[in-house]
Length: 388
Image (cartoon, rainbow, N blue to C red; front, side):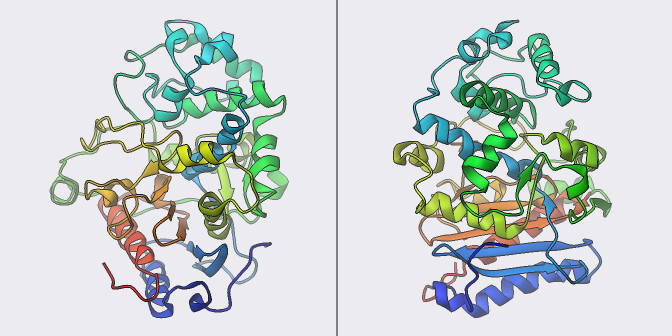
């Protein structure tokens, strides 16, 4: 590990007792047998204030599958190209990737892909096609649109980021996984982060496990305001697949990264401060603070609150429904992941936080409450201010 670990939370302006309460809340569900293991990190002023793992044998901290929290790192890599003027978000994807222009997709812009308004949320791409660039391009040609690009929002779990990965390769001239590593992870000292992890380097990745039982309709209605969660391609079995050695080797740009919680807390500190000058300032400000998609989420009906690659907490009091808990500022930004993975930063407090687990909890209500509790405790860790 190459990150800078503070001796005490107080050394970076955090309240030690509040950090301890956060750590204890994470430990609780592992001790109760609800999760096999978990890991968290909280950082401020460029340093890690706490980094803990529970439920894993002693030794080097394990790495976890990030699922869609991977998207936050890929967004940072893509933003480098935006800042260098190599891609304009208003460009049509087909100007860069001509193979994408079929079936009306010639109208799709890069920004629409970044905002999940492009119109191909569930466009299929799997093995063996995703193993090669040629295979991926052939699949792009077959994809069709579900709606007119830019007119609706629906989360694109994996499809959009395959397109972003191809754009990265076209414009950089190198493999997208290598670009993310060389331009983001390595300069920031994210030694555990990898996108495209060789099978012989996966021994420290926490094995995914399905746990718990599905919430009842009454529980869903009481907690989330819906009696059922619509079926998607992201089932527990599909998530297990994302953690297999074969798929981790592929490095799915929308959900196949692995890292420690400390890696991700360091990454979000970099987005807050960029002391290394990785990003052009205007492009970075767009990524972290300019909301360009407030269209309603088709499941919960709340505004998407998305920038070109990330989510923000928002001013509507619904930050807890976006994975940020209830205590962050409206300017908090980040990207969560399936299974309860959390990763964000808050410009108002300077805190970055990440929580990861290998337990795929089938009870989405319990998972949502866990996310809200942990993120809320993390958002309240700044010393010298009242709790919210």
